[in-house]
Amino acid sequence: MNEDILHRPLSELAALICARQVSAVETTRASIAAATRLNGELNCFLSIDADEALASAATADREMASGVYRGPLHGVPLAHKDMFYVEGRRSTGGSRIRGDFVATTTATVMHRLRLSGAITVGRLGMSEFAAWPTGHNDHYGTPSNPWNTAHITGGSSSGSACAVAARIVYGSLGSDTGGSIRLPAGICGVVGLKPTHGRVSRHGALPRVWSLDAVGPIARTTRDAALLLNAVAGHDPLDATSSHVPVDDTCPAADATAAGLRIAVPTNSVYTDTEPEILGNLENALAVFRSLGASVQRIAIPEPTRLYALADIIGKVEASSLHAEWIRERPGDYQTAVRTRIESGFFIPAVRYLEAVRLRSLVLKEFVAQVFEKADVLYLPTLTTRTPTISESAFTETALASKIISLMTQATRAINYLGLPAISIPCGFTTNGLPTAFQLVGRPFDESTLLRAGHAYESATEWTRQAPPVCSGVQDWRLAGAAVVAQA
Amino acid sequence: MAIDAPFIVALAREYYGMHITAKRALEIAAEVGALNESVRVAAKGLPFDCGPDEFVTTLQALTRGSGVGE
Image 1 (cartoon, rainbow over the protein chains, first blue to last red):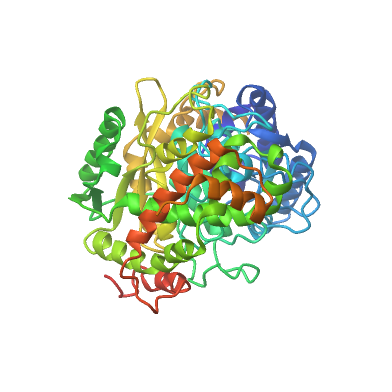
Image 2 (image 1 turned 30 degrees about the horizontal axis):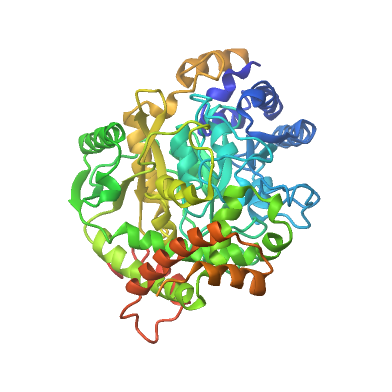
């Protein structure tokens, strides 16, 4: 089997595996071959664990042969950000400090994926300690954008977005504290979902900011993202912050529409100051939603810069607390950019931090009342500027750290403070061939509406069907389908 | 009143055992000063009995179909 199978979305592969038209071993071999072929150019994998992956795939196939089918992830090759612990395995967190760390526990999400029958092909690169939004990593190298390898992938789930976009794996788990799922997904032209605070267990996941971290999927389509979310979401007795809100099947029906969807677009600068070319794509996407029967209204939302500052206070203080000992004893083992970002947290008064924490529920109520009284979703850009090159966005001096972070996360960070779910969906390209994306933000635990709306948009457009030039051969998976089945 | 750079250098050394250059301390002072002011203004009128643990219950109360805020 050649690598054409890798161009099918996860939901399509699942049907082929279920019908035993393709095997887990064949698909995993193709994934490993693609990873091996492309990693020199893309640098998205820290390790490709071929033997283990093939052994798991063989188990999956034996189970299928004996009538055991675990569900849509059974036999599907995935790979994840190197921050989800698996007992007995290395987990670097993208850092030198944890370069030799071997986990003594298994993350609940990894356990749930194993129970679902998914295959783990390897460990994916990330920004150091999930703390840098461009994806630069001085310790393990910076992943390259599959659409143009001179450009960033975004971060911190840099390897995840890269590997999914490059059609190496069918999905990946990442984490999002200020945009670290949504940004790389948007920049690499794939779907990234930050679930509601507490929707997905964080047990066994490297923390970045306890109050803001969320674990979620990066995938090629919204239905793929939903299948991943279904597998990992739900209360976990090992994570006291995980919610007891029941998890429904979030996967949208194939014929789901956006008819009647009420979309709110901000009149604030977080939307209007978006670069014109990207804004044009965002407005085109709104026109598509209108054609699908959605309504669009322009409203003023609570000032995002205030929310950004509140999130920033919490982020800085909690990160400095987490890293206090290492910052003190091993400052030189951090990337300068990451250390710069963390160290200012030591000098924020506790009273200010607690005010930011205490304000959260009030600000959330105000935001939901103002935005969701007359709308189902809030529409935002994912990245408001053109995707920079790796060299032009490289960290050069400490004074610029805040500016880089602010530029990258101005449309994403506020949502983490609110704890609301948000999804990034591809919506075209800039003239230099790099993806653009919009975000949909929803009510607490309303991931289903986001996924349904995103699916309706995907069905009416072609952005998630296109593969980057770095992929061999097929650029549109619909052409790959017939060839794959014919070979089976 | 803004937190000043020499204070940051001294605090880093005495309290945290860290070395911060004078240049870096100036940058931190500016950054932290701006953040402190943003949050101080945002927190004006914060109800006395609003605690830090209400956020999770508020999230749950605002889910679609909860009837609250709809």
